[in-house]
Amino acid sequence: MTRGPIQSWAPYAAGGLVLVCAVLATARNIRKHARQLVLREKREAYLPTALAKLQATASPRPDIAARELSPRDLAHMRFFIDRGLQPIDSFNGFTIIDQFQPAALRYSLNFMQYALAIQQCQYTPSFHGYLSKAQRNLIAKFQDKRVWGYWIWEKLLGHFSLHFDPIGRDNIMLGGFLNLNINLYQANTGDRCYDQPGAFQFRLNVRKAYQHSAHTINAAAVHNFKASVLALYPCEPCLAYTYCNLLGLAGVPAYDRAHGQKHFTDIRNHFRKHLDEDACYPDFTFATGICNLTGTEVRLTEGVYTEMAYAWLANAHFPDVAQRSWAIVRTESLSLQQDGRIKIQTKGAADNLDLGAYRKSPTTLLAITAIGAREMGDDAMAEAAMAELDRVGNPTLEDGILRYEVSSYTQSHIAIARLLRRDDWRSTILNGPPASCLTGPLLTEASYPDVLVARAFSDGDDLQLVLYPGGTQRRQMLGLERLRPDTRYRVEGAVTEQIIADASGRANLSVDLEGRTPVNVLPA
Image (cartoon, rainbow, N blue to C red; front, side):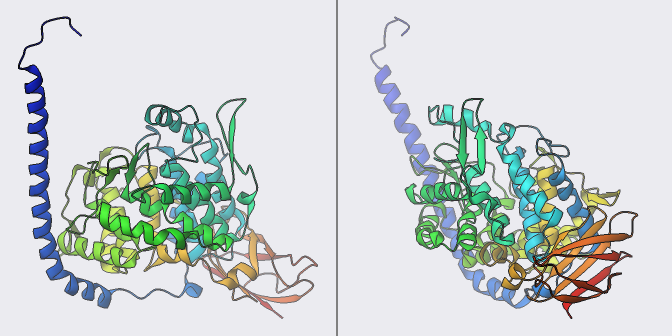
């Protein structure tokens, strides 16, 4: 290319350099494999005892019929309800830095929605109203090009393609995560608004829009899991991440639950086989990323936070993997000091970052620690992590809203940690609310933020509410649905002592809110 002379030894030198690099890489991998085998032997020795201890000390799963949000829980969830109730084209209160890494809007939207879905499923399954509207609005924001437009560049540079549909080949970090958002909402509420063709439109320009529904989005996820040689649905062109796959996989059983299908049954064993064989190291840890073209590891920012996340996310699909991951983390990386404060043995730079803002802070690590601990029933560790978050996260309570001095990404993780109890994530994905809450009386109208709903549960005939005032106007009107048509009900704890449902099963009642206000609606 330079038109100069080529030295006779140059081709041999070039070939030799390639050979040297190959030898060095092979030697490095052999040494790494040897260390992993030694660590595996050590872990195999302590895991039976560690697992037995975790099982013996795990808190029992709470009765969903008796669960209730505390005033502090309500104050924190208001942050996310406010984000959901703002205009769909507004992103006030979101951390906005870039659209490619963890600070991207899609990640904040995802975890905000997951937090609200957990609240609805585990605490207020018989309340829709503003809680459901906030979720629909957060889901609708995914259609904004500011959220999905990054895929234009990834598709162009990664696939050399001008077909920019964000639902299709690869892109679990939007399509797969959105699949979970949609189907958690639909399965928890019975609302099938996303089943209609064209319910989602990703508009590229005035002439072109990619139209989708819950069915096409889930079909794309199932196809990606089945089509991948490694069973891992790529996040970016040809790059698959274990964390993203354990999270995105949850959208398939959520879809099955909402629609009475068995897609997850078809892919579960295939996924598990390749998770164990291709993504799991001999020492029971997981590769953070894999290149689908070559099957080789893609080394990314690693830390103990990913190991904790695997315990949380895997519990919905593979409880044995979740328990093993948590036992390893609990034994090697977590401890409680004499003063009760949590101590975490970090492993990488990412462990000391607020990942949604790229600034030095242990808050993301603490939040994911609390999430993993809650899901495993390790309440002592969870409480210690939450207490440390209160020390380092600078929480403030202003105008009835609790917020931490963290990114919106980490803020939503803290909320999930606040809500979860043992096996809650697994239950939210696989089981959802009791059938009685999907057919029994329902609270559908309550003024926000004047009425804060801490509990809403139905045994199929009644409606049990716990309400708190969120404003200054104490007397509030509530709207109920799914009552028995033309039936009389008695009301306990409200101004209205009796109601008669109309022919469509609707009725209103008046209540005076004073602190914690229980209200029960029962057939007369």
